[in-house]
Image (tube, rainbow, N blue to C red; front, top):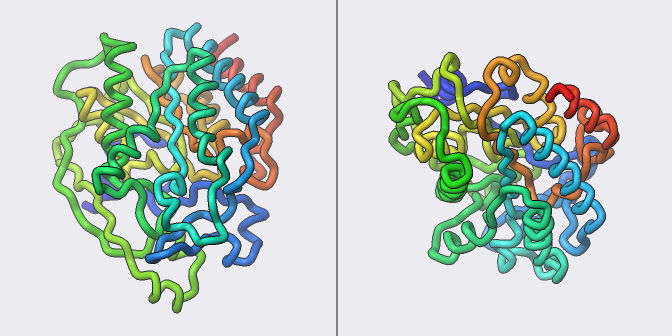
Length: 331
């Protein structure tokens, strides 16, 4: 049985197939020249080209934080703890690999900390994932793949452990029995192009850039987390938290409890992903004690209505999003 089919069987998934998902690629951007969609840095390092390296939308950050706080309060009323994980931008860790004409502004360098200050000021459960991953990077471990938008397994693992530690402090009595978490399997290595190289480079450019080695885990046959097992923790987000990169498995292993997950590519956006889960039969049948909502620093300021960034079916006004949120939670 392939890795993909094993994970598909094991995890409660309301999303799309596991591999090859793009984080933030708008419909309008998809029609642009491929050369504008990827930044080619030194030593074959590639970066997404559709986010700003110089401007920060502080008003958008405030608006998103207010919506998250409203979701937190609505979930609290249902005895569900919300934890928000904001994953930092790849460029923060590899500024030395950017081209000479593509530098981060002082505001963008501080954007992640601005988001953290807003979340913590609103009393929303979170942790500083940049500090965590920066420590890992400074130890000599890569936290993103060279030719891909996504994080490495060590980065996903470290974030999962931090998430689990916070959950244990805030919700010490998780439902379920010890021994029901996922048993981590052996590591596999795959030599291939990352999504940025595969999607946006010409064959000659791919040859010049070279492939990356992706490290993934083979799932143990008796790993648990079967679809029939209620999970006290659910993860919703984009392709960074898909099982291929290992985050939900490590979270389950660290908590020693089942973890469920729903995800779609990043051009769908975090707002519709939360609604899809809350409106699902799975949520109504087995609401979790903890909901982990994964967001992404570069797109944090994009609210539910971000025309040109989210796909058309995902765009909605703030008021429409609020209405669906409270409708799903029964207010």
